[in-house]
Image 1 (cartoon, each protein chain N blue to C red):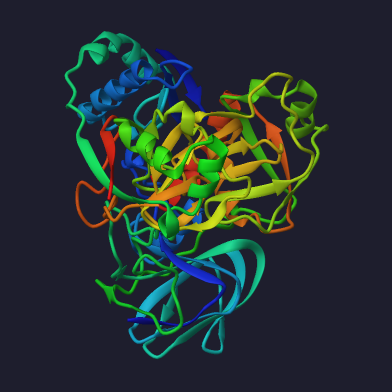
Image 2: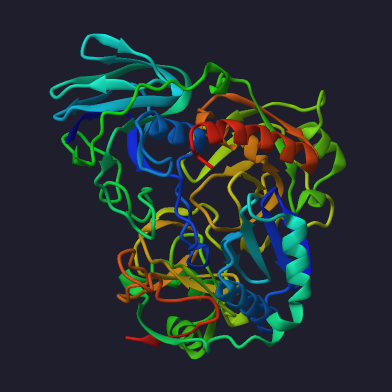
Length: 313
Length: 213
């Protein structure tokens, strides 16, 4: 059993996502950094799709009353197991009675913690991911609070593994997000598209503190609708990474909590850059860069190498 | 049927550009046809007013292959036998503490509150899509006399069971959630249960009638 002594700013149970129910409005609620979440499970000897904790902020304190193994991935953190500093992206053994403390987040925004063994949490529609808005999945459908306890079953003492340095992404702002064209790109003036997406011309945007798990709001040069173009669409399905433009021209990047939307969709963040969305924190700078579909596919293929290294494919 | 690519792993199947029952019936047939095929290449399908969005597995198929298959089967899709839609009767307590925006709607439309209720409860609505949150039915088409704009600033919390209207649509909030629709009533009917199938009371194409309590 693991006790949450302090939950940091926010700690929830996530996995690779809940799929197959978009037709009734159920979103994936997946880990925002899917590579990091899969990697923490690989490090602790679990399947990539097993649940992990997704945490924002320093101050996480966990107490173990079992012997197990643990790993921290995602945002770069300074963490201690009792008095000993532990390496991120590396398996470490934990003895019964041990306390894990994350004292500082150095780079990035969300980090992931896994344990060797299966967390006993609510599985709903084939996934343990927490749908916070509707209160189901994960730990009783809510964020973890001080005093909560998570049981572990099938505890194994995982081998010590290390994720190779070359697979660990940088998360330092300014962030560059590469995109492909979205269905309503033609709703916008050419000049404003150039100012948002064209290399060497693009203006930077700032992540708003109004961002949350459903969407990242950006503030910057507004996109200008062409004369006579509607500012909304008949609501339609959206995919994660879609950049929506509401009437005020300020972009919103859709994450894993929405299935349909009525705002125009100017672009879609390419899959190879979607994990980076987990690490956009309020006041970070972001620039966009339009790439071709061929380039997006090539970059994804590259990405699959690191995903298969941690058995996430 | 118009097929376009949506990002790296999406196919958008569009059937038209307007909110009406003919276009919507094509969307509904497409959805149930594809769902019944249980293709391992398809991860998820989101049917809405005018289009179906397919999320596909790039390890198993490609946009080109999927688009080819869909074009080949267009006729099968149009003639496929799909289930008859279910009809739901939803009891509603209109106005007062149950309908925060009833007085606004009544003033905006130039109707008495009783007239608003009578018009709202007269129609047999169609579920055009289910979403933004689990189980939320987008119902149409609302009588033009009740056409009311959304709130300019959405509410942070709309109570569970709220019945709202927005432009030519009406809908029901299955959970307490943020929302910008004008609330005219409240129902006690549960629309979503994450623990048991069918999770959502309503699915695309179902019919809904509101009954004044």
